[in-house]
Length: 380
Image 1 (cartoon, rainbow, N blue to C red):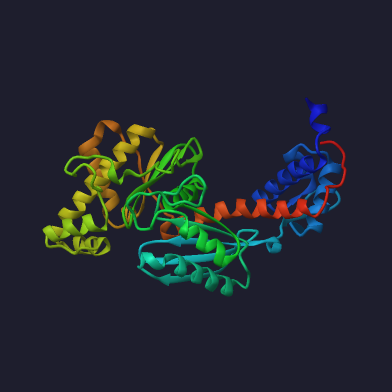
Image 2 (image 1 turned 45 degrees about the vertical axis):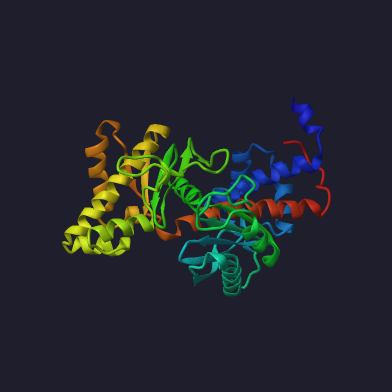
């Protein structure tokens, strides 16, 4: 087995070694060659030769000398931020936000456009990315878009389901054509779950309430999208008091509940009014919490998660404590573990940035391998 592997294509072997080194540097930089040898199991010669090529290609760079260790000072290496740049975009019903990141993951520039017209989303997203790129002084080579829609496995197609964005590939195709780079679409709550994955492991669900109700799922440390991207679409899961086929919570549903109680129709205003003692707002928030509790119960029965993490408006004001009270009242035997997210509005952008980092690595290594055959080297 070992001999067979060594007799394979040298370019493939070099790329495997180079990616292993790069992954360690990206995860724990700055690192010296001794740490890289220990972490990857590659020979000192292989590490030295591979690092030399990565430095020459501008993928990693010299980060100075480590004078803290015993013996001769070792050169430290870190990710070269100028190797590539990309953009992340978050589309909501009310605004579009874009940020440009360098290869090391540092945000270089950001722009935001207030826009509620679904028919102009692509135009708005393109303009917002260009504004962020101008602020950053870098042109993105890849873009990851967090969208309030069910996205097919191809990362291009919006599913033909009722929602804010029209179905098909028009949004993807317009962005790719106008920006002239690779574009990947993903569900915003899936990316929110990916951002949370950087903070905890295991199995959990991120239950979000903003424009509507939805969830991002992580199973055994991996983001779970489902076969058609439908995993986490809990708004339409049947629950008491909600007509089958209708969403349990949405802006329209909350406004309807609020009008019946002579309370403010927007959720932030409801939270403020309830805090000021408005009885109608208090009743509406309790009903919202009850519906969130049933959604959390459904997720618990399906996933048996370590936690259901409340995010966005579900994590604001008095809603978390109301949800916990509703869980105890309505679903006590399930013992649903409720937590509150601290990611805030930037959660989907953070998850998109993690996905962007992988895209940029693939792009840079593809470009590096196209420069010519890898040099022959000693076996690992």
